[in-house]
Figure 1 (tube, rainbow, N blue to C red):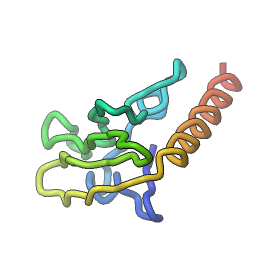
Figure 2 (figure 1 turned 180 degrees about the vertical axis):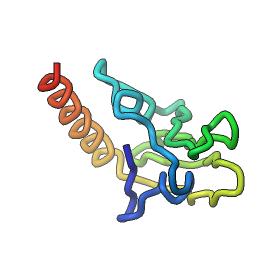
Figure 3 (figure 1 turned 135 degrees about the horizontal axis):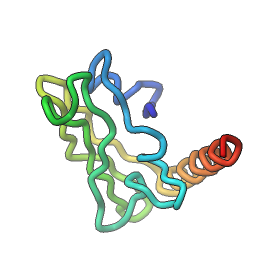
Length: 114
């Protein structure tokens, strides 16, 4: 998976050429709420790793937290020598709608292949 924010591929910029984002089944598990769901308590979500693997050079991860009507992506951890993305804020209703849309599309894809 890739994550585009304002048209920019956040994963590609932070993990470099040859790196990868999470597989769809990791980010959007068929059972529902995965690491991208925003809660008041927040959680860390791994979004990618460089070609040499995250165990070697570090993962790209972000802390996802709901704050009232906003979802915040902050406290980025990045692979060695890669740029740290800025903090992003999303409208919580739009964020939830996009996750539901993506999850629904993923479930349809799984059902067709199963």
